[in-house]
Amino acid sequence: MSNDYSVYELGDFHLQAGGSLPNAKLAYKTYGQLNTEKNNVVVLPTFYTGSHMRNEGFFGDGRAIDPAKHFIVSVNMFGNGISSSPSNTLKDTPPLLGGFPNITLFDNIKAQHQLLTEELGVEEIALVAGWSMAGCQAYQWAAQYPKMVKAILPFMASAKTSEHNIVFLEGVKAALQADAVYADGNYTEPPVKGLKAFGRIYAGWAFSQTFYREEMYRLKGFDSAEALLQDWEQDHLDWDANDLLCKLWTWQQSDISRQEPYNGDFIAALKAIEAKTIVIVCDNDLYFRPEDNQLEVKYIKNGELRIFNSPWGHCVASPGNEPKFEAFLDNSIAELLQ
Image (tube, rainbow, N blue to C red):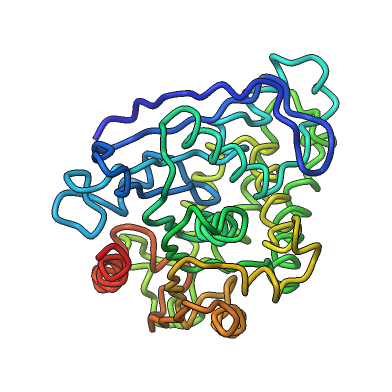
C-alpha cells in the first residue's frame, strides 16, 4: 500500500475551546469503494503516534476490514504532523506563532464528519474502530453523531481519560518540557534530551511488568531492557515536541460528555450511544484499565466488554506483536460488520 494521501481543506475551523484554527487541513486516505447502498463505510482514526500508513496494519485482503468489501476512510488526527499540527502550521501562520490552539476530540470528530458528509458523500458509518486514542475517537463519534454510527470497536481506549492516565501523561510532558532547549515551545532546534526522556518514560508504561520480568523484549530483537529504551528514545526523536504535546492535551481532555446535550453528564453520554459496541481491553494495559471499560459498557445499551490476556500490555495491539490478538480483534470486527 502506498503512503500517498488526500487533504481536505476546512478553512478557518471553529474550535470547541473557542477561537479557530486558520486554514485547517485534514489529511486522509481511502481504500476500497463506496457501494451503491453507501453502507460499507469503515472509519479508522489515527492513534497517538499513528498515521494513516500505520493504520494499514489493521486491515487488508481477507481480513475482517477488507478493501474489497469496505470503503475505508483512514483519517489523521490534528497534531500528528500530517493534518494541521504545530510543526506544519506555526511557521506558515504568523498569528499562531505564540502557540497552537487547543484541540479536543470533539473538534477532530466534527472535522471528520464534515469530510465524510460534504466531501465523500457518506451518510452512514458501518464501523468506527481504533487503537488507543483512535479508540477514544470511536467513542466520541458514537456520542457526537449517534444516529450516523452503526457500530464501534474501541480497543485499549476509553470514553473518558481517567485521572491515573492524566497523571501518567503529566509525567512524560514534564520530562519533555524540562529540557532547556524546549524554551516553552519556542525552540529553534529539537529538544533532544527532552524527547529522549519522553520516550524512555513511555516505554515503562507501554508494556507490562511481566513483559520486562520475562525479558519479552528479546522477541523484538533487543538483548536488554536498556536496548529497548534506547530504541524508544530514537523513535521519539522523529517527532516534533509541540506535535506530541498538542495531542497529549487532546488525550487528557478526552471525555464524550463534554458537549451538548450532555453537559458533563458522563453516564447520560454513554446511554446515548446507539451503536452496537464491542470494547476490547488488555488485562495488562497500564493506561486503559478494564475497570474503566466495565463501567462504560454497563451504560452502553448495546455494549460488550472483551478482555484479552497478554503481558504485552498496551502494545499488544501494535501490528506484528501478537498474532493471537490480531485474530481476536478480527473476529470481533467481523461480528459487528455482519
